[in-house]
Amino acid sequence: MSSASSTSKQILGQFVTALSSKQPTPGGGAAAAVSAAIGAAAAQMSAAYTQRKKDQESGAAEKANSLISSLSVHAENYLHAADEDAAAYADLQRTWKDPAIGEEEKARIEAKALAVPVTLLERCHEDVMSIQSFLPFCNSNITSDAKVGIHQLAGAARAAFQTAMVNSPSEEEKKRLKNLLKDIRQVEDSILDLE
Image (cartoon, rainbow, N blue to C red; front, side):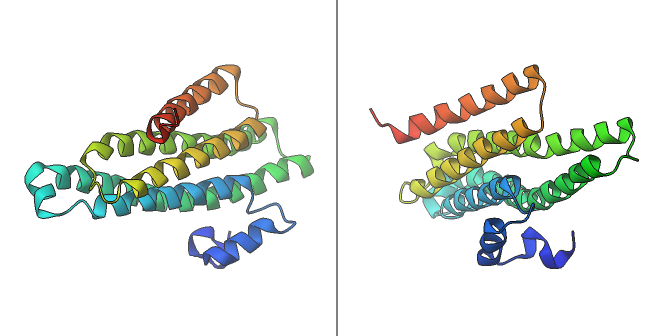
């Protein structure tokens, strides 16, 4: 994929337009990845606002800085995952059209196409759990943004799950991924407090 069409380099409006068009990529995997990047950024902002003097004194700022470090790396990785998804899908399409591709190479390509959304879901799970752990220390004036991050990442995880299912994971892997989603749902349920 050329850098001119790279998701991580596009203006959001251009990405949305490309996503809505009748072309194979960007697709659902890229949408999930961009959503995850937005979620990570929202939660990172809440940590950036947890830097007041009282946050420094209580140790909350240290926890915020730790969250900022991990989320900033993951936000960039999420954007790159959108490009990885497009590349994996292009390779997968080749396996449908090129009879010269051997079974071993086809299996490698299929495994990569599955690995991209699985890794995305795993990272979303990790970040949701990190943000949840940070919530009690978050500047109370901005916890809503941390929660927005959780919800965005949760949606991205569910979307990545759908992309993974298209790529035929084993029953054991399906079960593992569903358990990660259940963990995320429990976090969402606890912060929504709808009862």
